[in-house]
Amino acid sequence: MPDAQTADETRQGLEVRDLSFRYGSKVALDAISFEVAPGRFCALLGPNGAGKSTLVSLLTHLLVAPQVDIRIAGHDLRQHPRRALADLGVVFQQPTLDLSLTVRQNMAYFAALHGLPRSQTQARIDAALDRLGMRERAGEKVRALNGGHRRRMELARALLHEPKVLLLDEPTVGLDAAARQSITDHVHDLADQGLCVLWATHLTDEVRDADQLLVLHHGQILAAGQTGDLRGDKPLSNWFLSQTEVPA
Ligand code: ADP
Image (tube, rainbow, N blue to C red; front, side):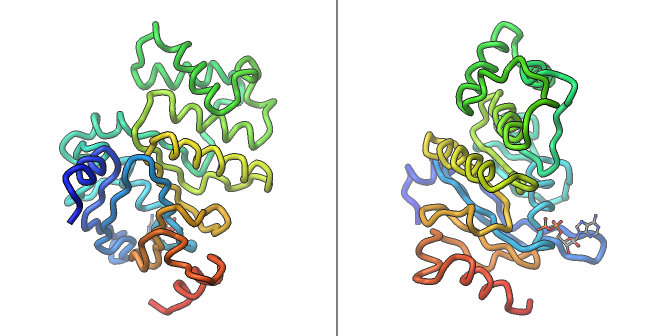
């Protein structure tokens, strides 16, 4: 049993209980449960078709299921979706930036959508860009940025409303090795600073031994724990393959 302090801390993070979802007769998620505490980087690792995007859609309320038990920073997503989503930052797999606007204009547009007070907008934008080392790019059109900087900007934008939980769906898709490393490092730093992070990926080199790990396959969690403990003395890629090659 977790002690009172641990349980309380988890309530500020992410909790998923007994979550199932089907597309018609196709089971995409089969009664999955997990918790991610504040300050933890949790990798949701699964091959294509595992159910990662379905989970992300349920967490962001794009998909709604009748009996969803999800808590974001302590708010029940079904009963209080606005409060829950106000504490959630999201970086989707597909970029969602307006290329013809500057970095600052994109951020300001998002701030307005989130209902941030105008008096706070510029300071929040500066702080979010500073966190990602992007302040000097604020006046550039997004079209002029390379893929890595665009992704960093999306990450800065996801932090603008100061969420407690950050959700990323395969955020390094399409990036070169250096940009992938940089984004992965940045998000680990954010977790070290106290953010609760859920990072969906199929790439084992984005996961560190100290990270919390959930292995998702055919809609089920096959393994959960600290990455270093789970992989033992095998490279993570070999251990992951040995888990997911088992026929479901
Ligand atoms: P991942 O993101 O890990 O690749 P998905 O969540 O996209 O996995 O898919 C989980 C399962 O649900 C897969 O078997 C996929 O084929 C199926 N699936 C996903 N979206 C749909 C849909 N709109 N209609 C029917 N089946 C779907």
